[in-house]
Amino acid sequence: SSVQAQTNQYTAAVNQNAGAMVFAVRRWFLGALAIAAVGRATGGAMANLEVLQTTLVNVTGSTKRAGLAFDYLTRFAARTPFTIDKVIETFVRLQQTTSLAFRTQPLEEFGELLTGLGNLASVVGTDIENVMQGIQNAVSGRIQRLQVALKTQVSIIGDEIEIKFRDRVIRTERTIEALTLALAELGNTEFADAMERQVRTLDGAFSNLKDIALIALSAL
Image (cartoon, rainbow, N blue to C red):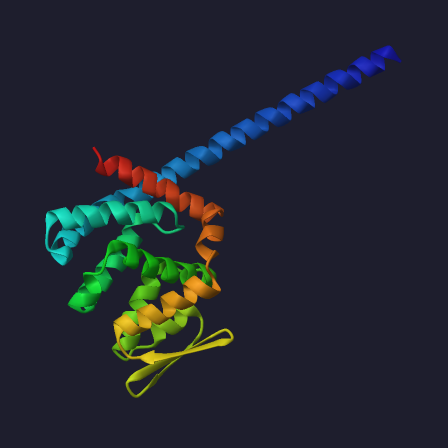
């Protein structure tokens, strides 16, 4: 009947509006949670970022070079699933533990290294700075951190390090420069789009959201 039809239409409209309202409330709630989480995450990260900016001056040797490095690393982090502070920490570790010739190379070449390490970190689901720390430890004879970070087998053979990563075996001299270059090359050749895929996930988006908040706060 026409009465029944009108009733059905009304019921459908109410259900549709209710569904839209629930969806809107859910979106608002998730957005509020994200903002709150970002606020909590950026509090400590902001203080850490200020320390890292000072550290950049120390490792690069001048305020000007530190500023150029900070700008470059900020742009780099925006294209990755990693936060600015983790990217800077990785760069600082490289600056503090490598030879003068290695650490004074152009920022673009450091970008290639960071991209390779970042791709490798994305493949195994860890942070780029965690991989860098594992490299440092492995060179000093403590291989466990790198094994855990890359989820693979690492062996020290005299003055060389051997890594069995999936179907690849990498053997290189036991220096931070050589091991970093070897792993970066693996990340850039075998897993070139790993970071790009991860940055499109929810975790990657949240990382970028935290970076936006950090940049805004640091500009105040």
